[in-house]
Length: 102
Image (cartoon, rainbow, N blue to C red; front, side, top):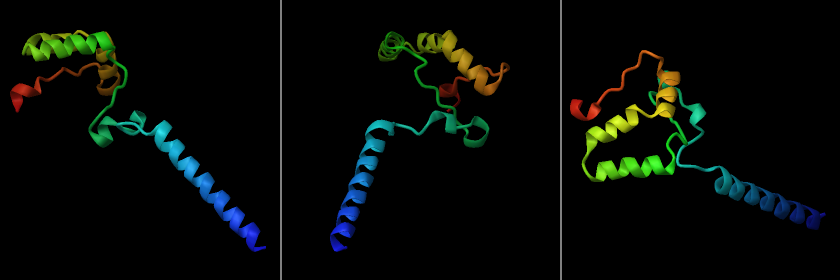
């Protein structure tokens, strides 16, 4: 009887450990599931995979060259980003340049 309890306890701990490792290895991310965030409730929207690597590198290059107007234009003219922002905020949203407001 003691052996069964011991084996059952070790097996249960092992399963819990495997599930814990699996969760953090496969499902943990920088943020939680972006679908959990709501602009009205949380004040933020998270968009993943909007810009590809080439677009990111081009924007970073403009930032490194301190060409912030071109950076802003690249973001304003990106069709995927526009679509996501309009879905989240509505078609009347106008992109604000908060750098100058702060």
